[in-house]
Length: 259
Image (cartoon, rainbow, N blue to C red; front, side):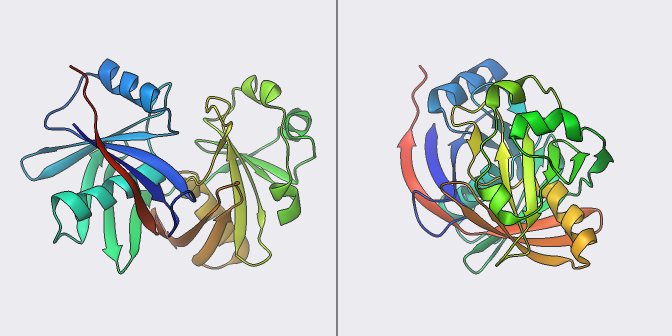
């Protein structure tokens, strides 16, 4: 099968978030896709196949299939539009999170994702020991979301990953704060990744966008994920949906042989 690696949410290779994209002629068994994702050892590997005129998309971490991944969706759309249907400007994927549409606008790829407004919970004392500082407020959606006082706290945070692994609250842990040069900043931690931190996470913004739209009283925002690789996300709150846009760049084209 053809295999691509795309750096999403960046204009330059070695920045943003790398995702593997496997183009399949037919669906594969889950165990095989999981083994491929484990072998690739990226935070996400996307598997794309077409039935009739419809595209289907699945996402796997090295350990499990997940229900939503933003940067790998952008990467999959980049591959479809640049190597499969070169005249297409819109692609819609059937996924575990329903129909997801990606539209190419100039050099940007705009993803239409589900809106997941987080709910406030009271676990401040429980997580203070995990991240090393006391959050202002704590929330839950798919991920545990911790509001910090300022951008510097987000940037220099050094969590205890052994303690984080025992939290069992949400898929990952997001720390966020109002930005100094952008509307808001964040970082995304998940102990299941070898690096413990995801470089740029589109799916976490399904919750961060409505959260910050309400706090900032604005629907169009620019966000930055403050990982070592870093990434910029252009965000729009659209009631039941959110739109997340960014650039993407090709790093690698290859072939995977499993027979």
